Image 1: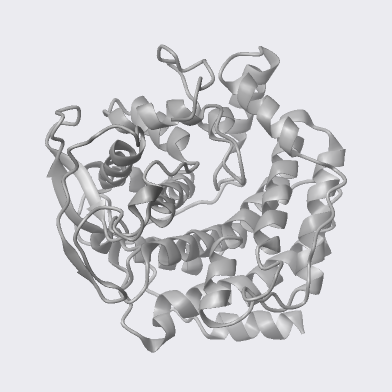
Image 2: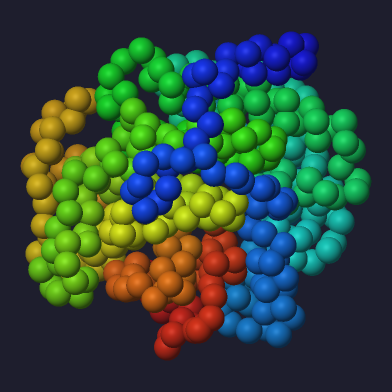
Amino acid sequence: LLMVVFLTVASGCTTEEVENKIPNVDNKEPGVTEIVLNHPCMLHTDNDFAYVKKKIEEKAEPWYMGFQKLKDKVNIYYTPKAIEVTDRSKPGFADPSRDAEAAYQMALMWRLTGDKAYANAAIRILNAWAKINKSMGSDANEIIVVGYCGYKFANAAEMIRDYSEWRKEDFEIFKLWMVGVLYNTCYQYLALHYEEDPMNTWLSWDAPILASALSIGILCDDMEKVNYALNYFYEGAGPACINKAVVDWHEDPAGNVKGKHLAQTTESGREMGHAMTTVTMYGYICQMAYNIGIDLFAYKDNVVLDICEYLAKYNVNPNEDIDMPFTPYNTIKEGWKSIIGQNDPSKRGQRVVGYELIYNHYKCKGANPYYSREFARTMRPEGEGVDFGTLMYTREPIEEGEDKAAETER
């Protein structure tokens, strides 16, 4: 049955439908790019693990406080809640995401400590879902569930794929499940969007699905799937396409960011709970691409940083008055958005994980992640879900105050 599912999915995504080419990040014409996958190569690499392990052994901050937060989260006796069919309209629809997060955290602890108990706990979760689950629901309900669990399951599996006690046949079953249930949903959505206008959806729906599609392609060593996801980032029909995600660029009235480098997204008129997922999702997509040799972070003069800076500026100090530039825009789904956070202005100040990744990446490149830096400091040590950013993304040089936990969450 698994093989039938696999062949059915594979036959539904031919090379005629998915062009095997990757546009260059310097805005030239698309060209074929050879990618070699040196596993693990999603959110973290072997070099990352070696670097962080050394910092933990030295009890160096802020890595050590991030590690303590991870230790507090994991539970080797965690019991997965795998079921045959999930349903977002019923209790428990978030269980796939929570179980995937737990598997990721166990796998990460194994990588950093070598304790097999954590790896075995992760395997127990991954095997349960692969052997029990057959569907994540239908229509929009399915998209939400798959989008927010796919990349988590994939990253967990990527970290323990070479663990000697994960049976090869179980790993193969897991990959077949990821393709047959999760990737099939990702591809059908990104390619068809329910046969509606591809922009009749939200960036907070499109981007998680894109992150999951990319991660599954990497996990399965499937370059057709990897290239499809990368091409979607550049040229896709929906709002996760970076060239469709930005409504307008603005100058910073406060002058902390020079030039037009505050990017307002198609999600900026909604409440901030949804808008801020943009930071997390683009961070994951770019980090996974970066670890296979494609620098999406640098695309269009750091447009991803521009997006993160706009949202950080608005949310970092929610109790302070702010001169926030905004261009009114029209959405197919909800009509005109005339102010930032229009759906619920009270949600200004929403906290999301992901800013440690963004801040540290651009810091190391010598860019000016001004508001991202400020936002990261309000959440340090960052750590929940699959984003223990203070632990895994902090890189030297350490700036003043960066080795301290946040005094308050503003």
